[in-house]
Structures are given as C-alpha cells and as structure tokens.
Amino acid sequence: MPDFTAHRHPVLAVRCPTCGKAPGLWCRRPSGHRAADLHTARRAEADRVFIEQHGPTAAIIHAASGWLIDPQGRSRD
Ligand SMILES: [Zn+2]
Image (cartoon, rainbow, N blue to C red; front, side, top):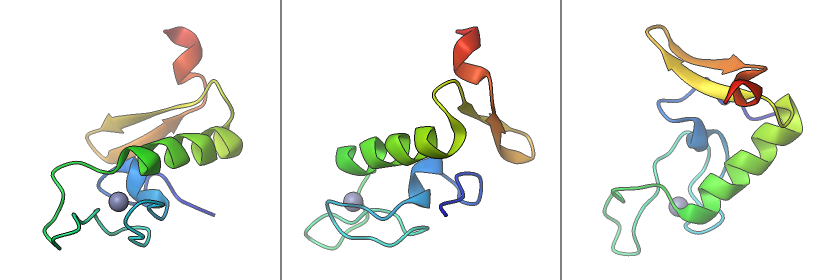
C-alpha cells in the first residue's frame, strides 16, 4: 500500500504511468534527465489512490517533521 508520507513528495508514493518510474523515484524526461516536475498522470494517480486510502475529506500537509495526513483537511477549506 503506498505510503504518502514516506517520500520527499507525496506523489512519489505511486509508480508513474507516464515514464514508469517506481515509487520513491523522481520522474525522468525521455532524454533521461530528471524532470523539473512530476508527470500530470502520476499526480492524478496519486490523488486517486490517496482518496481511496484516506477518503475524500483527507489532505496531506507538510509539517516541520515531514508529511502528515490530515483526515479532515479538505472539509475545512
Ligand atoms: Zn513520470
């Protein structure tokens, strides 16, 4: 099960559908260079899995100690 708090960016918890990078590894451009940004499809996939795991009201926040799941984060918007 992906752990959204384990990596330096929450989206890294899932494999990238676009470039195939494994969880924990940053996206690569076709040239092999590190992409400046993570692929859009990976962000969408991370969002889908996150909601599946934590529910539609949960959000992930960056605290001093790292990433934290806030179960009601989105409902307070
Ligand atoms: Zn990618």
